Amino acid sequence: MFDVGAFNWIRDNRDFLFAEGRFMLAQDELKNAAAESVKKRIPENDQLEVLRIMSVLFPQSAKWFEGRDSFREDFDNVTMRRGVGSEAGYDAYFGMNPSSDAIPKTVVNDLMSRSGDAMDSRRPSVPTSARKIVAAGR
Image (cartoon, rainbow, N blue to C red; front, side, top):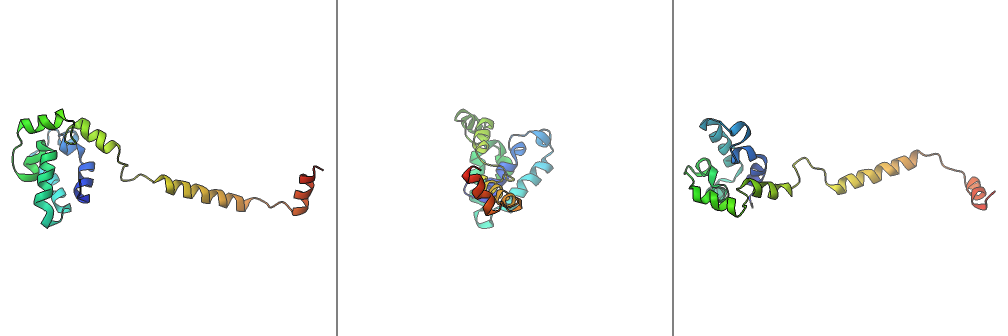
């Protein structure tokens, strides 16, 4: 998905897209509110195009994105090809994407190396004469 706002919304709203969790038996008002939240994230001049793409990717939610009912054949095709609009395709696609609260490995490594430097600076220094004695084997 090329629109960051729409991508993040899709990633964060699996229950809405597959009518699970709080959306399993939800009233239309709740579903409309969820669809409106994605519309607010998309720049107005791109909204029709992005919502159309979302309707193609998730035909089962086209009613909420574009106000049109999906056709069962559309959803069946998405499911057969394991597209992102099928549960298996969604899980495979977003399973590869780090969660929004993930900490990059480079940040962890940098912090660990800094903590190692801090630990080294707290160690008592060994006088040079003592190092010479140890090195000489005395």
